[in-house]
Length: 353
Image 1 (spheres, rainbow, N blue to C red):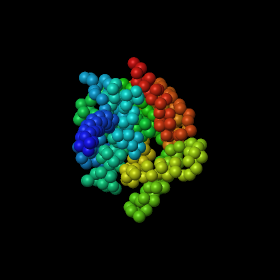
Image 2 (image 1 turned 90 degrees about the vertical axis):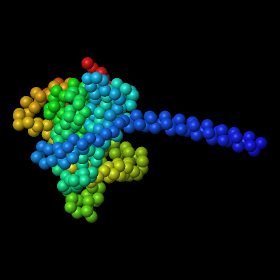
Image 3 (image 1 turned 30 degrees about the vertical axis):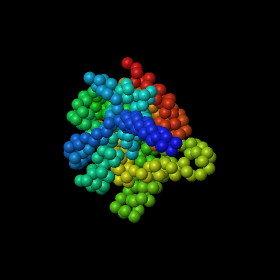
C-alpha cells in the first residue's frame, strides 16, 4: 500500500512539475511579450543645442510587434516626465490604442530618465558634470537613433503623454514630414505664465539640495510634494482623503516619485521649464506654425495643474488639429482616470485614413 502511495505521489509530483514547467514557460512568454524587446543604443557623442556634448550618448528603445516592409505601421511613443519605456506596456496590449498586433510600437526613453543617458548613469559626466539638455535635444537624439541606427525614415504616428506630449509638439515642427499623425496628451507647445511659476518653484527648491548632500533628500522630498499636490485637483485630493481617512494617498505618490534619482528629476524639470517650440528656428510664430504637416490629435484637461491647456487649445485651432477637452477633476492624472475613453478616442483617430 505504501509503495502504491509512493508511486502515485511520484507520478503526481512529476505531473505537477511538468504542468508547472509548461505554465511557467507560458507565463514567461507572455511576460516577455508584455515587456517587449529592449535595446540600448550608443549613438556616439551627441552635441546638444547649447553647444555642450553628451559623451557616448545612449538611448533606450523598447519595441513591440512587427514592422511591415515600409514602416507604415510604425507608432513611436515618447516617455513622460520621470517615465520609462517599460511603463507603456499596458497601452500596447491587444485592444488598447497602441495595439502591438496592429502596430510596430517603438517606445523611446528620454534623456535624463535613468535609462537613456542621464546624470545618474553616466560614467563620464555624472551629476553636475552632465550637460543641461532640452526637450529639443530629446527629440533630436531620438531622430538620430531612428534614422541612422534603426533605418526608419518615416513613421505612421508619434505620440506622447505629458513630457512625451512636449516632445511630440517639438517633433511636428522640428521634423514635420517624419510622421503622418501626431498625438499629444496633456502636452504643450510652450509654457504659459502659470507653468513657468510652477516649474521655477520646483527648480528653486531642488537647487537648495545641489552641492549640499545633507540637504539633498529634504529638497527632493519638498519638490516631490509640490509636484504631487499639483498632479491632482483639490477636489480629487479631498475625495481620496475621505475614502482613505488618512494621508496614505499623498504618501503613496510621494514615495513612488522619490524612487527617482534626484539629479535626473532636476535635469528633466529644467528641460520642461525651458520648453518652447516657437524658438526652434529664428522665425516668427506664424512661420513655425506653418511648418506643421502632421494630422494632429490634441487631448487636454481644463483642470490640469501641471500643464496648462491654454497653449495647446490655441495651437489646435491654428493647425486645425482635432481637439478633445476632458474636463475631469483628477487633474494631470486624467490619462489614467479616463484611460478607456482616451484609448477609444486615440484608436478612432489612428484608424482614420
